[in-house]
Amino acid sequence: MTPQQQAPATPGREAPTVLAVADTHALLWFATGQHNKLGRRAREHFERTDQREAAVYVPTFVLAEVGELVQRGRIRLPHPFGQWMNALIGSKVYIAADLSVDVIRCAHELFDIPERGDRLIAATAVSLALPLMTRDPQIAECAQVEQLWD
Image 1 (cartoon, rainbow, N blue to C red):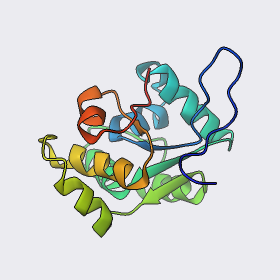
Image 2 (image 1 turned 180 degrees about the vertical axis):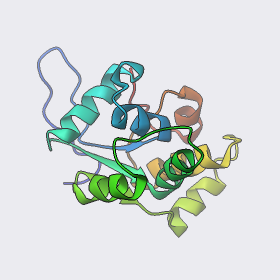
Image 3 (image 1 turned 90 degrees about the horizontal axis):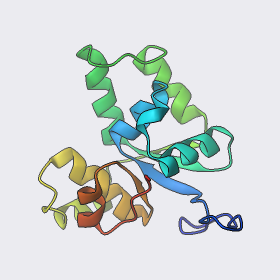
Image 4 (image 1 turned 120 degrees about the horizontal axis):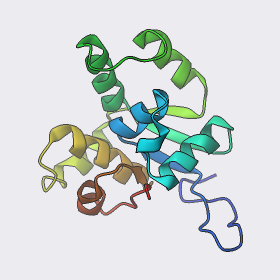
């Protein structure tokens, strides 16, 4: 299945996306049970992922940010960080997207996104040609990727 492939649409609804890239806040809100903070399409994608009907690429930069937030006591995960991360990636439906040369090359074209972390996350979506689950429309717009949120 290529990244652009989608499941068939239900009459009267958009075709659900099979693959997407997660921004840090989206992944954290789902992981910590704050589903009400997610946009409808992002929430549905995470739910389909947990049912093994979709998958989420998680930039390794996002994993680093989550680890730092846990270390600083700003968030609490349901399990210790290392255990949580291993279970997430071990699930095979949450796929680590490495900070590759291609991602760096894409990020170099995205300096309209001022924050480095956001730029690297958006560049991951660009390099994979996938929608980005983020509540920030400017990031998706600057990267010219689909925003998978509302």
